[in-house]
Length: 294
Image (spheres, rainbow, N blue to C red):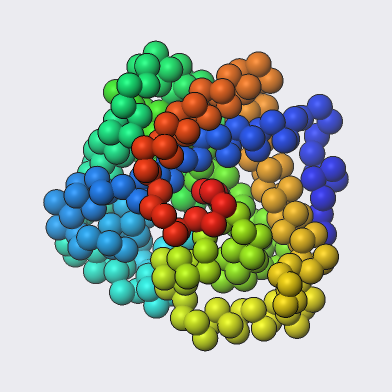
C-alpha cells in the first residue's frame, strides 16, 4: 500500500489541508438533507427524493447515463440509480436543474446560517475561491462538470459553489484512493460505516440502495480478505482505511498548499464557526450519521 509519506512533497502540511476540507464539508453536504433541495428541484419537474439528489449532483456533467452516475457517485447501488436516471432528463433539462440547485443551496444556507455576519461569508468565499484557482480537472469528472459552471455573484451562493468545487475535487481523488487500495463502492461504504464515523448501517443501506443480502455479501468478502471480523475492522482493515484516507488527503492538498498556513487556518476558523451554526440549526436529521458528516 502507498503511504502519505511516500507521496507527499516535502514541506506540505497535508493534515492542515485535510482539517480545512473537513471544516468546510458541512457547508456543502447539509444541502442533501434540506427541504429546499426537493422544493426547488421538484419545481423543475423532477420527482422529490432520490431523483432530485442524483439529477442535482450530476446535472453539471450534462444529461449523463445511469452508468456514468453510478461510476462517479461510486457507492450507490446501480439499480437505485437506474430508477431515476435517465428518466430525470426527460422531466427537466440539466441547465434547469443546475439553476434550481444553486437557488436551493442559497436558500438552505441562508436559513441555517441566520445571523452569521455577511463579512465572514464574503471572506470565506474569497479564500475558497482563491484556493480553487489551482484545481485541475484531469481524472476528476464530477469536479470538471462543476468547474465548467459560471461562478455565482451573490456571496452565499458563491461560497457554496467554492465549497462544492473543493468537495467534488477531493471526492474524485478519494475514488482514486479507493481503487488504489482495492475497495469497491459497497466495500468502501461498509468499511466506513464500521468505523462509527459515517452513516449508520440502516441509513447507508436505505440511502445508497443496497439490500441486506448485498450488504451481507460485502461483509463476507471483506471478512474473507481479512479486513473485517466480528468485532469490526481488523488490524489490516484499519490500516487499509488509513491508507485510503492518507492518499485522499495527499490528492487534495493543492488548494490549501496554495493558500498557505495562515490563510488555511483562517479557513478552518471561519468554516468551523459556520458549520457549528448549521449543525445546531438541525441541518442533519437524527439517526442518519453515527459520528458526524463526512
